[in-house]
Length: 104
Image (cartoon, rainbow, N blue to C red; front, top):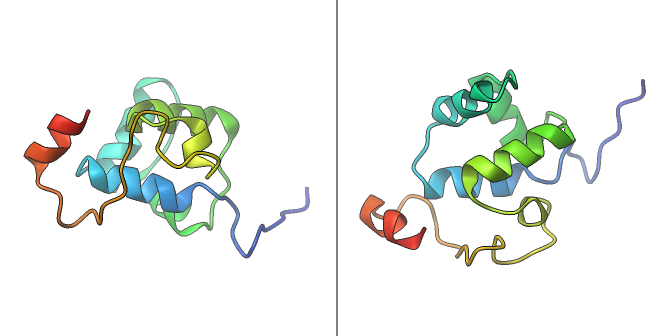
């Protein structure tokens, strides 16, 4: 099987996975643990590689990540601007946890 890159990356959702993960103040390990509950094996380094674009993301993984991060698959793919649920864009380091809880 030939491995292809798109604009130098193996996925187009990594930046948005990172953005949404930071919004909920989840560590990469926290995020990786959630798909495992649904039977999808994902390790912390898998999340890291997804976020930096060096790992392919299967369709079933994308769907599960969207469910966990409370965004749409379309938003993760860059097809929507608001996450399908009013997701706003803020730098992840400055959002207080209390504010995040009130956003959802």
